[in-house]
Length: 121
Image (cartoon, rainbow, N blue to C red; front, side):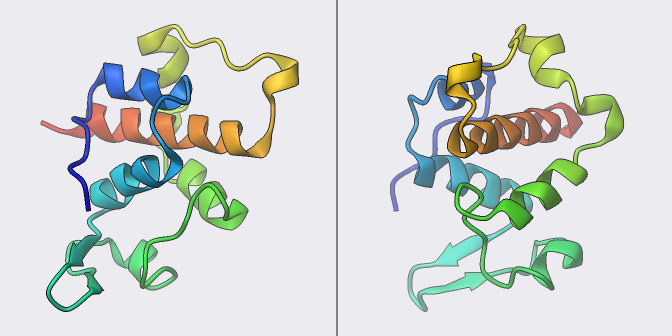
């Protein structure tokens, strides 16, 4: 698999502006959740994944395709971080005509990643 982009504000903006493909956005979230793909065995190592995720998703979910996984991701964002896209990046959301599930799920993933980034020491 190709190398992941750095987790920073530019990458979050690229997710929101649809400049990074869906698989890479998924991979950023998977990596942040602790999922690691073992090339040699071609299986997912979940040793670092929180049991709340690992038990329900022994393999990382496609957050773009799975509404339940995206809902779980949304619920896992601490309340104080729910508005980080607006507070930190000034992102005001998508226009009405852009409100399609794929983009709103990408925004959820971007917000979760920004929350994750903020929680790192």
